[in-house]
Length: 202
Image 1 (cartoon, rainbow, N blue to C red):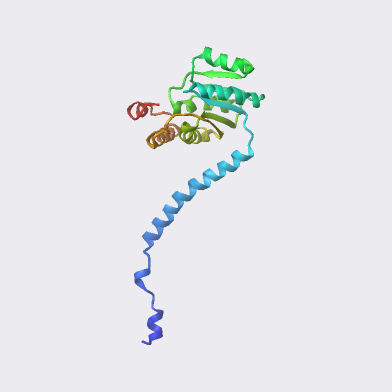
Image 2 (image 1 turned 135 degrees about the vertical axis):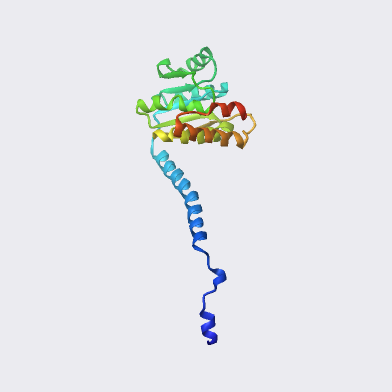
């Protein structure tokens, strides 16, 4: 065999077995599909005008912020999930000149996941397909993830509006836990509330 022929022989050491290629394609798909989904949701969100304001309770500054935000959007109804006592909430919005006809106070939720699961079907039944999501900046990452899963399962878009706070950033374990709980709810209708009690509370 000539030297040229030897040079043209395939180098078996650089070949990848078919099983490796299949694994590589699967890994790329697992990475690209979520990216494509969130890109699609982002475009949808950009093009859609919110039809309501959803405030997640848990800190009085969220309701104070939401009252001022609602004045800038006088046409939008407001849902407040849990939060301060009703008298305080009504006083905050009354002082901001917000009509009680716009307020929907829901005290069913006990944590971040149920903030969304208790309201998603009510909002959907009213034809709402996009909402402003108001919560603390340190809580927004976890809330957005849960909301994208729960509300996204009903075709409702979220437009985050962060409230500045002085709280410490939340640990990533809470975000992972509640993301798993949200997926569980979509699959089974159960929120996995026991997980919340055993791993870090709300």
